[in-house]
Image: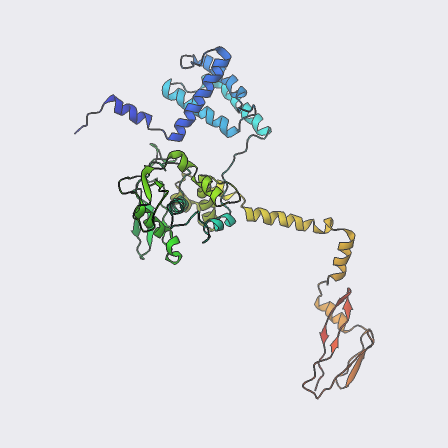
Length: 435
C-alpha cells in the first residue's frame, strides 16, 4: 500500500527537517551576507554568483563583519554565521564553501579567528549553574515562587522540576509539549517516577540519530517525605488543574482562582517567548543573586551529578548528550564555593605579609609553638625548677617563688598548680603527690 503524497507535503517535510535554532542561524547568516553585498556592490543577490566571485566576497565578509556597536564578534558567532551560509548554499545552490575552490576564503577565515582570539574574543559564555544559596531560596518554605497552592507557583515548580530532573534543554520543544509528553509509572521496588513518554527531535537527535540514541532516560522519582513539595505529587496536582479542553502542557494561569476548583488555567497556551524566559522571570521574583537562563537548570543538574561521582556515560543517557566531551565542559567549570575557597586560600597565604608590624608582634607573643616530646622533657628537667620530693609536705618553685602546700593524706585537696610561662604564655602542669 502506498499513500498519495502531494508536493506540498514533501516541501513541508523538507522545511521541517531542520530545528528551529538551525533555521534561525541560517536566516540570520543569509541576511547579514546580503546586507554586506548590498553595501559593497549594490545588490544582495549571491545565488547567481560564480564560485570565484563568491570566494572573493566571502573573503572580505569574514574580516569586515562587526556587531551593531562596531566591536568584533566572538569566535563562536563567526563560526555560527559561516555554518549558516554553508548550509544555505549547499541546500539551495549545491555549492560547498569548504571545497578547494574556496581556498582563499578558508585561509582568511582561519586568520580572522586567530586574530579574534588574540584580542580576547575567543571565549565562550557558558550558562552558569544555579548556586546552592539560590536553590535554597527557591525551595524555601516561605517563598511564593514555588507555592504549589497557587497556579503560577505550581506551574513554575513543575516546570523547574521537569527541566532539572530530566535535564531538559533551555527552550527546545517547550511549546510543543502536551499532557501526554510525560508519564507516571512505578518501578520494581514500588517507587513512583515521572519520565518522558514521547520521543522528540532536538538539536542532538535529528534525522541522523542512531536508533539507540534517545532524548533522555532520566527519571524524576517521588520524594514522599516532602509532602506537597514532592516532585511527583506536584506534577500530579498540576495535571489535575489543567484546562480539560486544551491539550497543551503549559497553559496560562488564571488571574482569579479558587483552591478547591478543578481548573486553575485558561484555555490558552503559554507563548514560546514566555516559556523561553521562564527562569529569568523566576530569578527576578525570587530575588536570586543573578538572572539565570533556562539552560542554567540543565547545567545545574549535570554539574550536581558529576560532583556526586556519577560517570559521564551515565549522565549522557539522562541528558541526551552524544559524547562525553560535552559533559566534561560542565564538569571542568569551577563552582562558586570552590572559587571562594581558592581565593580564601590565597588570602591566607598573604595574611602575614599584609599585617602591620604591631599586629605581627602581638600574634607572635600570643602564639604557643608546637611542643615536641623532647621539648616537654627539657621543661621538666630544667634547672630553674627545684626537684619536687614525693615525701615532702610542701615545695617551692624558685622561678616564681610560689609556695603550694600539699596535704598528702587529704583526698579533698586539689593538686598543686605550677604555672611557668613559655613565649609569654601560661602553661599549666599538675603534679600529684605520691601516697
